[in-house]
Length: 287
Image (cartoon, rainbow, N blue to C red):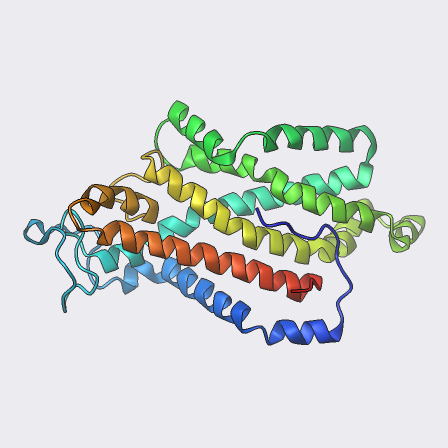
């Protein structure tokens, strides 16, 4: 996974101006915004019912009525791609939201109190980090049955170290800055120091890590659906679409798997580029 800075860097006006003019970041942000819009409005924008079957047009090619053609059961591919954006993006969004919130809380707690608590949190994270998230999600799904609930919980736990480790390092440095000691001497409550000072200073780092992590979470969720342990038919989820279209590839009809795979690739690359651009913009990293 892409390495991120472990502390907030001093940003100069020149770097801030460079971040604003970064065309690649702007394009990536536009692509992300487009797919988020599809996730929100997908069912309303789909030109056809994504689950309507036409057995007379199985694997039909593009036409005026069906721009991307039909899938292996005669369903409109464009409609399924648009409608599937919601199911495809929602699961990794939940994974990242849960792991980021819990990871940030763990990082602040460990950095603030230190000592045995910090050592315990670090050790527990090392144990969790030793289990690949995808393998953990597959095992949980195999035990509790197919569906996205169990894999989302497993992936949320697996992604905890990715945010906690980075934020903890930055929080330790922030914790020992003079202003924190001054606030404590003035009698400021711990919760107020966290919410009004530490967390706002760490928020750019958290945002960058969450943005990049989203792409990896999407890949994991799509892989789980591809294995048949996540979304179930007839859901138009992209990972499931890749799996459903696989048998048709050898028959010379790769469009279902191809289009869904391209959509996954575009979103993952866009989130990674956006995260890298935000890292330069918010954290002052050099290109």
